[in-house]
Image (cartoon, rainbow, N blue to C red; front, side, top):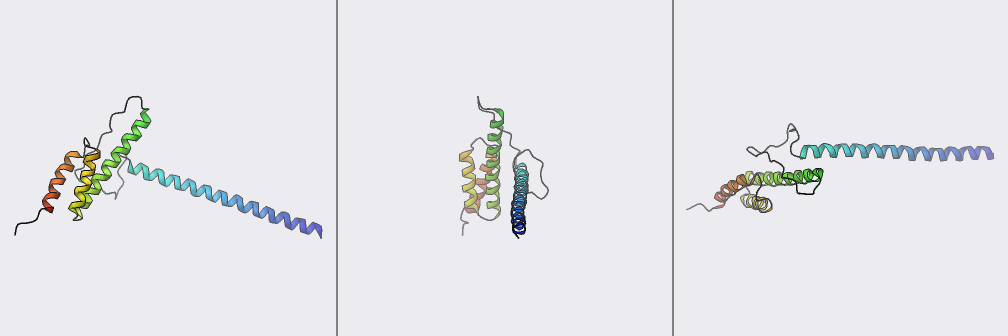
Length: 144
């Protein structure tokens, strides 16, 4: 009788250990898949990567060149910082143009102003200034 109880106890402990091992393997697989999805997303978001079919493209948007590296900054850090700035510029420009297309000229002007205030020497600056003038014309009251 004692032997049967010990065998059942060991089998139960083995089942618990096996269940924990399976849960850990499943968790590790999900973490790896999540990292792959994130890496894929970042590769699509960073400039200089291939264009994904179906991704929105702003017509006439210039291809921005990275800013020069700061002295004493490692090249990898400088490149990452330049990429982040270019991504932010592109996102602000795209958001402003989408707001203008959606019939929200005031919001578009605010977004273009934020772009110009943060990045006055951006490659998008000339287009942003021209777009602001276009959006101001939409805001102006029409003569009666």
